[in-house]
Length: 311
Image (cartoon, rainbow, N blue to C red; front, side, top):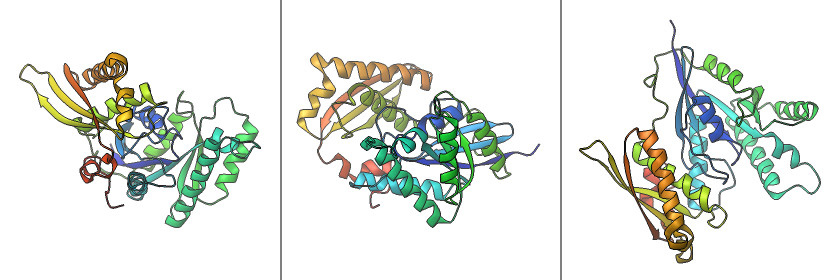
């Protein structure tokens, strides 16, 4: 029996569906999924099994035009993840890509198309071909999809094209089989039942951040972070977790707290329920909201997330 194991990086514009695809390929939740763009801040490795092959998925942050230090570190991290992988999958939101070319296109679609162009240039400059995966194909006309696939394939940046829907799973099994074939021969890198290599403290912070954005994504732009400040295994088998939610302005604190603390209570409850399930033990979770307008400029945040502060 020949085993295979290697790394597959999933790159794409913010909101292309990278985390959804990673979770779908792994068959478990390893990357947080929210309707906010730029949710993934560092490469999360999910481990997918296909026959005798182990595919370690590097779900990278979205690649976009960076403005702030955090943005630059995220883009650097995304390209770093791609450079080190055995295979690169470029995930493209097919609906946004086609909509961007229409008159009166939405700003978000135009941004998405511009990000796709930027990634294309990056791929060409790197001199290596990627697998193109056109995502969100449900309900789209076949002729338009084929024309889009042909246009992108003709750039020379891709070795092959897959049409998928990460949300409902169509086409994903074919992509998974292909990735398995492309993994180099060698021993598995992780135990068979392991689905991710994210440290528990980091996973806990990510889960809480997901709940935070699910609840207040309209009012709280991207200016929030969650840090696990204490993670203590108790004698009774439970775990006690303390976390700080950082916002940049005093006016944002009441948004996170909510009326009579109801919003924070909801975030804590949902996060605790999911962590209890993921860690398979009782979780005592304590959340504190702190105002720190410079949290995105603190070196220690970057190290904990595996990002380069000096990018």
